Image (cartoon, rainbow, N blue to C red; front, side, top):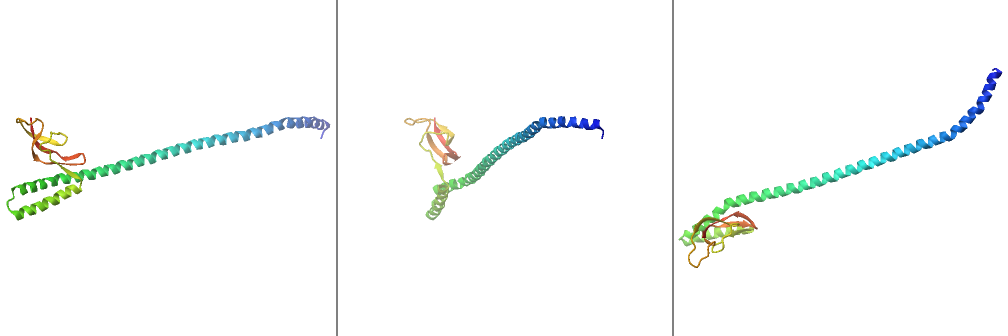
Length: 188
């Protein structure tokens, strides 16, 4: 190698060492900076994951609540459908009781009368077991919540208007729900 090249190399070596020495803190700083950036990036990803997990949890809780509400509504709908069906059947059976009462009123034979009374008692027991009460408002004030006025007559002396004079067809209710309104004659 020529002397010039050796001299150049000799001159470059201290410059190279000096540059490396100057860059060493920069390299360390760059390494620290890169680690810091990675940590910041991981923390950001962690926060995003936590936010996403919270969102999923919220959606899961809402879905669970919606399903619970759906289940309750469905249960209530089924219960109401059952009770409505039961009321429909009872409404169809009530004329049988009416006919038994009419037959009892017009029967002259004692044995037949006893038989009709037995059947009528079992019918009334059935209604009682189902929680059904008769509405028989004779001589009471007319209440449109339980009665249907199908006739009226002028009130006589000493009788106040707006009272039930005669019951043509007894009504029935279960609790406060009217199954069949009583058909009555009202004084006016």
